[in-house]
Image (cartoon, one colour):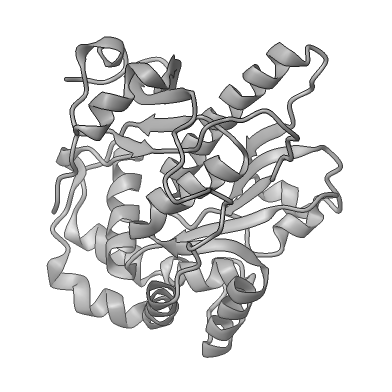
Length: 308
């Protein structure tokens, strides 16, 4: 069991300069419990802030759609004709082709053992059920919960069994069709790159979607079995870990460009009525940049969103 840091993440963008603007729509193939919620939440808040800035200059601007699409009934839809800026989904690879537009595809992978354990404890928290070793064994031995990353990225439904051929298919999809992919260690780079290519504000993000400590489980006694049951996910993870696609040229001149003039703050709020949700605030970057560089977070404007 591990505890995460309470310090917010800093995802820098680059200074917004006058000139032509080109939107780069993003589709996230969201593999469960890989940190993709942080990616989606950060990009959603930044897109919202960008659209407010654009609408201020162009009042008749109509923002494109930002949405999570996980309803199984959507798999039956032949074509989506709405214009989208950001879509995230747990649906199998290929779902993005239903849209009448092009996306830059991204995805994040995580160490299979840690992903499986996190999936279980997170579901316990959502159901308000204490974790137990017997229940955990039942969960990770179920075919639906094995090799989940290979299944989704190769285009298989979760109840299906994955094969070595599915691993190669997933790798081919990554190599041929994805703009960026990496592991949890690449999250900051991927978010910053997307912010930069879309000229979106910087983001300071709280730790999102964490499992409460009382729902954590020591799964080390099952680690070998879980890795064996998820051998295909191990192979795919090893490939991505060794060959991440994160080194993208975003056109910065002379290395370090100044940060964007605006920064979005994101805090996860726990509410008895609404449950967990993200609160956001836009501030001028000059009010926070020195604190970020020095690794400290001042009382204002963080006092309303971030617990000190």
